[in-house]
Image 1 (cartoon, protein in one colour):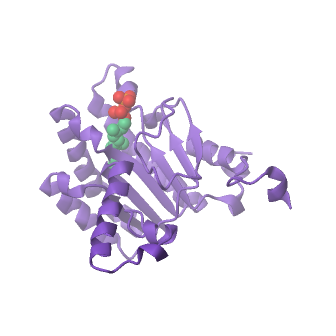
Image 2 (spheres, rainbow, N blue to C red):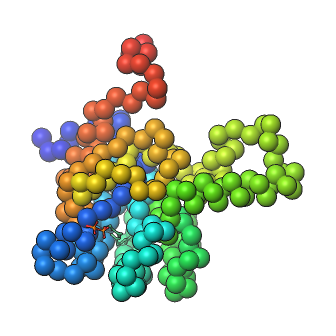
Length: 247
Ligand code: FPP
């Protein structure tokens, strides 16, 4: 039986988040430049979207570009931006026809204007789709997300739009960039690193983490299904005991 067939269709995570790591090392190990690693990585993004659709994952969030990544050499940053624009040009029609909605989180205004425009075009074109929400984190960091929420809350409090004595987690979550998106049940990080790297710090509170040594360009559908299979064989206790869960 293939791994895909072994996956329990009743226990598919709604939301999978991915730290796509190892493009640079993948390229280096082949004597290629870093950008060719990112180009291969973009192909993996496509196959991961396909795999999500095949098994019914409803939200896929990828860490494409952290706030800190903006400090990489100018040539790599602009190469990544071009790759993003080209990927949208090449794939948008297919994504749109496949029922994928594109969403972007992060400090988008820090990105070049042409990239911002292209992203907005993709968001608008796919806004009515409901099969899979594909969330691209760009110039994103978890601390920025939380700080940004706090700033908006302070401003709304000043305008008497919020009652601080009657403000709970759900109210707070509406101020995060992921408002209306359920928390990821599963976080995947490739390339052997076992860090959260300022990704969805608040949203990953109860997520299962899956780490693999495979570099992102090699993380094919089979590897993705392996991650889902591992997730399904873990016990999510949310602070309770095993016995409590069984009863
Ligand atoms: C991490 O590998 C990867 C990135 C910083 C960029 C990820 C971007 C893509 C896969 C491009 C396309 C994205 C979309 C959404 C189409 P690394 O460079 O840190 O690898 P290393 O740790 O081996 O150096």
